Length: 368
Image (tube, rainbow, N blue to C red; front, top):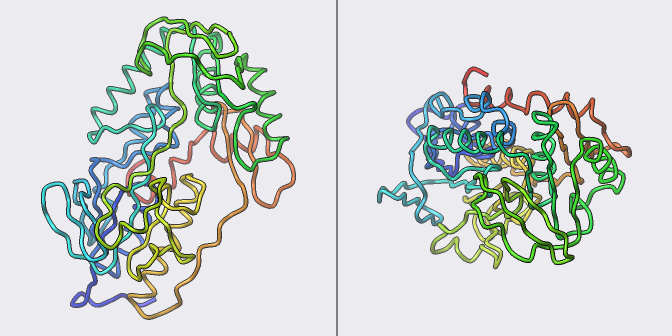
């Protein structure tokens, strides 16, 4: 693949410096004037955020500076205020004209799964503060028995086996989604071995009176009449796509659920040079691994359009796949092409011990 000469460099504006955005920006840095728009001062490896909550020594490993991501392009530290098919207007008022635009702004999620702090040091202190409160708590309530709730329960038990952890969900079973019943059974069994209490099938009558992640003993009651006393709680549900910046000719592609409709090639519906990926598009599910695969397709398609070499191709969704560590050494998963549940040993090798830090550190050019 040839490199475009310096006197002809189309501008590619990448909105969002998360898992998909950094991959697209990095991949096109040699053939375009890449402008990455991101309000945070560091990439946040959210996959490992729960590990950092129970072990703050991980914090420097999950907040990685953007300084070495691009060789020729630049990072604009600001939020996208309005984006149409030809330009990006950031919060400062600066307008960035672009030949190609990639929307990769991801989603918001309650702490500790994600943080909304734009400065790494502020985020560090919130994790450390919540860690101190969690360390002192004897009883922990986790609301939501999806992947985040399950992983957080496992992380807490791995560090503090004696803590009483209650995992509560309105659903009748853990881990909603297109997964094998055997996977849920395996995870339930491991949670039972860890001593995690499951309360399923009933909502709380009222929300806990304290803020999530802060110390304060309370008692709440489920609709079924079960009382739960805890010293701290965390909300482990509530993904919200970030797409409020869509303007003018891009706005019609946003659905009632604030997702963006895309073509098979991951173009925004009705657009030729605007692409979208990750948690904000109608092609799910919202997982970092899927965003990475979509980023490779988007970057390849834009490269083909810029160079005139190769063809624009469609993104091929993967079958259901999930990896759920319950601490560094336990967990289970469902992988493509395998009929059986993947057990703890494989999950620990894939994700549990390393939390996938290495590949992200390599992309960002930082020491692991």
